[in-house]
Image 1 (cartoon, rainbow, N blue to C red):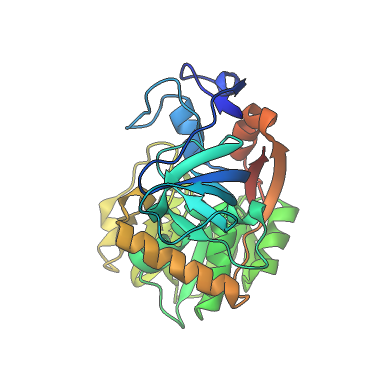
Image 2: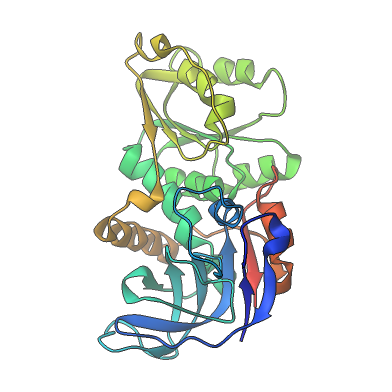
Length: 320
């Protein structure tokens, strides 16, 4: 079968399309014919060797996939060949025509959700849910600002927050991104590429501020976030690409919280609860993943460049 194989950590060019042996499912595992594989920033960090835990070389990247069950191993009870599924794994292997994953990290794909959308659920959608409801403790009636709302996790967070009864504010940096955030359910959108957008935000919020901020780029925005929070508000850090210096006193007067979030800290129970909620939201028509681009498997290097650029409006997926 065809698969992307990385033989040495480095630039996107190390992603090579190769013929390898088709895997077989072991005990508790499922063999999935991959119809779409999600591309996430964490895939680029691992490929570049800049991640705390790295796989043994050579390896096939990709943690998110959607497709059809080809075969099941011993002791698999929830799935059978022919089932439409999505995989939300941690071990990689999704950039391929077939992949093997544990039953406990695989979920049934709801009717009406296509494979490209299904491949967008594992990391982006689950991260949005965890940031909003596990770490952020979002409640109906609150105001939430989603900073960097036009990305894969951001557009999901906008939809989920709107559905949960929050008033949603969002930022993006392109006309296309601002339109996508608005269409996904934000009440008001702001162009964070403009130098005066913070003043515009403050003018709109008044003295009340926001109860919760979902932050996709903390090294740029965290200092401003603390100023925008309401008393006892929370900022949840989903992403950061560098260091930042802040004055801790900025958290004291309003007793605000800075909360880190890592999807990989979620237990199996928490993951199952998250995906049950996401599946329920999709079945109810309250949430649908947004796909920005579909690329052939051979374009994996291009996908890794694209996913790290600003201005993406949704998820990037590879089609074997």
